[in-house]
Amino acid sequence: MVDDTSFSADGLTSISGGRGRVGGRVRVRRSRTIFPTIFGAVVIASVISSGLFRLAVADPSVMGLVWAGLAAVAVVGVVFPVLSLGFMRTRVIDAPVDLFVGQLSTVELELSGRASGLRMRCGRSPMFVLDLTSPATVRLPLQIAQRGAFDHIPVEVSTDAPFSILTVSERRILPLRRQMLVGPVPTPGVAAVGQITGEDSDHPAVGHAMTGDTVRSVRPYVSGDAMHMVHWPSSARVGSLVVRELEPPATQGVAVVLQLIGNNGDPMVEEAVSLGAGIGANALDRGARLVLCMSTGDGPLRHEVADRIDLQRRLALAVPGPPAAPPKGWPVQTVASSATGSRTTGSPREGSDGAGTFRG
Image (cartoon, rainbow, N blue to C red; front, side, top):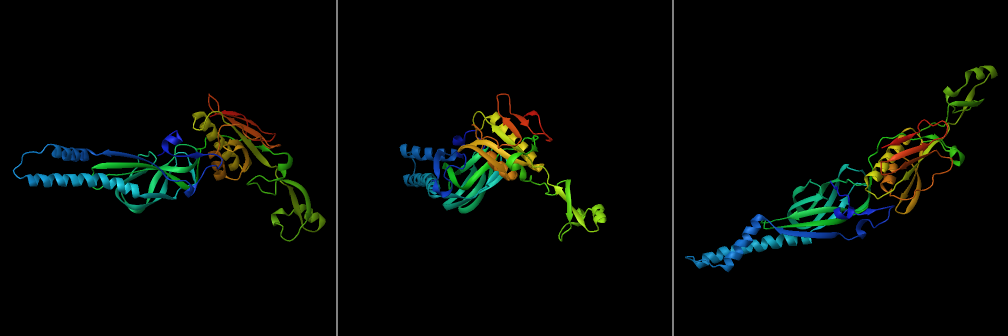
């Protein structure tokens, strides 16, 4: 589980609004830690003491062989893990593109070079994958606890092979092939859906039939018309089949405005984004059109959301700052972060079935 609140501390690099370098265009960054094992400390101390203090023995040649053997074990045990990790290469083959905060997934890595006895994990997860060898392809558990967009992933690899003399541990920051978007876990909310007026009113709401529910007029039947649309009383009166023409339903929608104050990762900011996700999901589930007005790393953004995946991806990029203005003629619902918690205020037009002020 990647659970750092600081991206730089954990090695995950956050990018906003799609900026940043992705894929193989960024070099792998490494940091190395070397420390002896308890067994290794005993062996090294024995080699040093044997060299400094020549003990009186009946056969000095036997003592020399023992000392040479210990020295060889110590040298190989120190040099081999350093060289094996130094020449081993790691590359991300596959990683998820869309995640929720805290969602468990995996990342697939390709290991090249000769190494054995490897222990690997992603970030600071307590879940290690043990006894790996290189070359190989491995999958590591991945769980990210911070919303955002990422172009790198941290991986920790260590080994003490072959004699457990020295443990070499490296933290590698690997570039991802594609940007990883981690969206918020939605907090349930009610969208202030209302009727859209103006230029956008002629576009039907997602999930609503074009037939409507109000009879506008009748017209003669033509081939291809549905039989259930036949208006039988009028057909009997005029002596030929006529069908009903219905008014299209009023276009329903809501513009959700995110007013975020603070920094990404602040509890109140993340609470507001999660509430915005819940409100947006509620609007989509009810077949209404949804526009997000927020701020990204590239500035204010206004975007009509197509589905839940699109909603999740857009909210992964949300940052504190001035949001874009809502479109004219749309009901507006504002979700704001404050010191006392996230809040939402809606201003739906007449006919809306959701309004009011809520606190998350």
